[in-house]
Image (cartoon, rainbow, N blue to C red; front, side):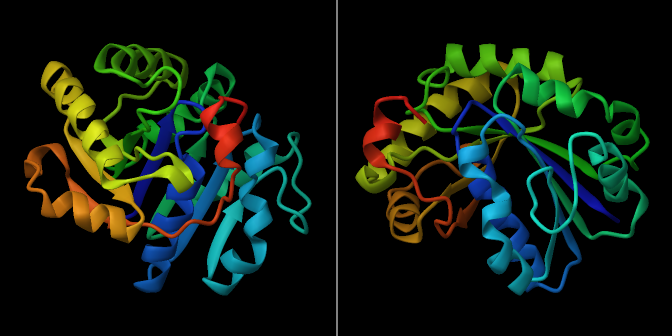
Length: 235
């Protein structure tokens, strides 16, 4: 059965990075994989900039900034239809981290509703070092706002807490504590904990409760950013 995963979350929480990594893992397993880029706000971290790597890994992409595909905001809807009409094993939707991004997803509400039961997951990507995600109250508030705009219900949290080059295993620990509270209060499970392998391994070795970590997924870094800009909220 086709698996469809929607990635939402606060601005610069790491949705595009995670989409690339989950797609790469699936493609490496021989699964026919498509990524739909609905982040129409943040052109700085365009997934389309990763064309050579995506092509090499046999990952298809639908994006308005995907050079060579001839896609624009006008003909994007027809291209997105392929996510529902074609026989993919995994489809990932990378959604912008604001109202506009979530609304871009809502137009496909009926398509998502027609998917077979159990085939759709909606992951809220959380980096507790980003605005609107520093504590459980803020995480749950933003989650509710994005759910309303996107017309989708979050099925799992993802702990992607990091400070780029300043990241330590304690960053994931801080994210773990915030999402533990958010999970207990909302009843939404933690689906994934993600990070560079060295930090992820160290954190998992510290003995966190499995129900608040979900599946540990080591990621590669593709979307390079300036730590200074990141920490001062400019990206």
